[in-house]
Image 1 (spheres, rainbow, N blue to C red):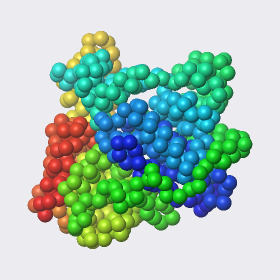
Image 2 (spheres, rainbow, N blue to C red):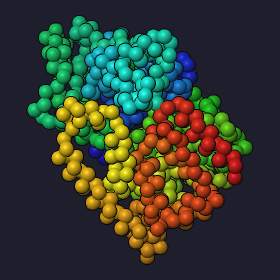
Image 3 (cartoon, one colour):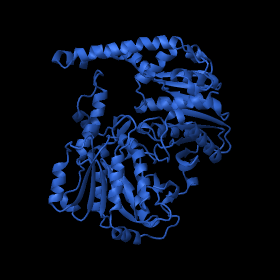
Image 4 (cartoon, one colour):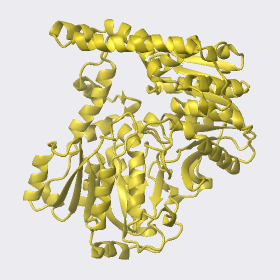
Length: 591
């Protein structure tokens, strides 16, 4: 693929029935005959967050074939207006219809629909209701909404397993939903209407899809592994559905907590689209109306928050700017955390925080690092994020020229990336660090020894395993021995290491020392937010208590520290998100 031929992505706000819909168009490569465009039907809740980088990679690969892709965030999801609790299945489907209309009036027609996970059901529903759409791309499709929603609800059950009085069944959650309650799961409040609709939707019957071509992709852990949808696929094929089934080997990126890419899936999808006939594409493109400035697109100056792109070297980064007050002199840049995330954050935590800060007058920029989310380039990790942060601040100053103070905010790995950068840029006057990442293998062992084993001995689930014979003492003793040995080693190493151990450049220092050195060299105010129920936070506590490098650092008056008891790593409950936003807003106003 010739990257130099790629057109920049085109983000805009599409007018939705209830509010603005963030839309990103990946145009075909320049000088290539347009073969038609594809609309994405995204996956549900956190799967949407974890799939975003894969979506961008696939969209750019399709662009090289002359096929554009439109990604629309339905209302209440991603960067679109509203809260997740506002969303319903039928309204989300209407949002995607607006995307189809945009492609037909301002793009290259709508050649096909691409559905990921439960989005496959929505894509199929839209195709059944639109005779002009003849093709479907389905990634790891969910076939029954009810079973998918049940698995989602079980996340809440698992989270409350050890809590006294916790919810013990999905039936109880469904009863609460039927009574009109929003059901919050991992930071996503599901409204009663959406819950009811999810229980009812499924992939259409074979007869309804008989006129469509389906390219069905399953990601398997091994080539000889059986898949769970063989019966439905056989039924479709037996009843005349033109279905091209393509299993590939790769990671289950839509559910992993670590960033993962499935190259075989990208290659197989690109190959399938490349084989589509030119006649089909041409028929779709011929229906396209002349491009212009359509009435269904919101101009940037009409929105409280709007998308923009900016350069970082040869790459293009994607961002959302929340305006704040026109007279603001202090603004915030949110650096996305590592893992399978993009600028919205887990359960839209950064969307929620940015909107609350903008209401208090502070402009906020959220952006994707290179190779993450919708940004182009290669993912290099938080240790190499300095050029990205600098480019984001440059873009913020251009968009909001009256500001003269920038505050950086980051969680986990991005908090550490900020520590490596902030003291180098005079425009940065403050920083907010959420559960900073200082993890090493030895440090992780220390946390396991001091916290995990004690917690496990108090766990009813552990003693249930002991009674029922599920406990394996030999394996547990081996693990304990290895962790204790690493724990002793890290205590000795940490006692001998400080931030002035002869290294001039941070890159030459061990991570715990490097983060301490970054905080010492930055002389502005800093706020540290810690979760009460999080191993990464506990590891930070252990290191700052025992490391020479951190000695006395957190006692300096310029540093404020808050701990939110019981909160998880990403402050997923709404009450926690509100408290964090209040602390951040109050701190910004206090200096």
